[in-house]
Image 1 (cartoon, rainbow, N blue to C red):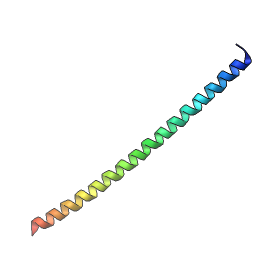
Image 2 (image 1 turned 90 degrees about the horizontal axis):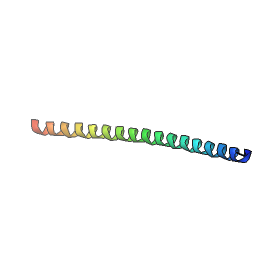
Image 3 (image 1 turned 120 degrees about the vertical axis):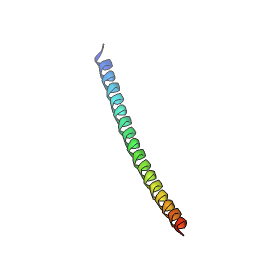
Image 4 (image 1 turned 45 degrees about the vertical axis):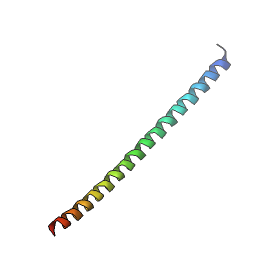
Length: 62
C-alpha cells in the first residue's frame, strides 16, 4: 500500500472518530436535556396535583 493510501486511511479514520465522538456528545446532551425537561414536567404536575387536592379538600370541608 502506498504512503498516500495510508495517509488517506488515517485521515478517514480520524474523521470517523471525530464524527462519532461528536455524535455521542450531542446524544448525551440531548438525554440530559430530556431528563431536565421531564423533571420539570413532573414537578409541575406535582404542584398542580397538590393545588387541586388542596382546593378539593377545602371544598369538601365546607
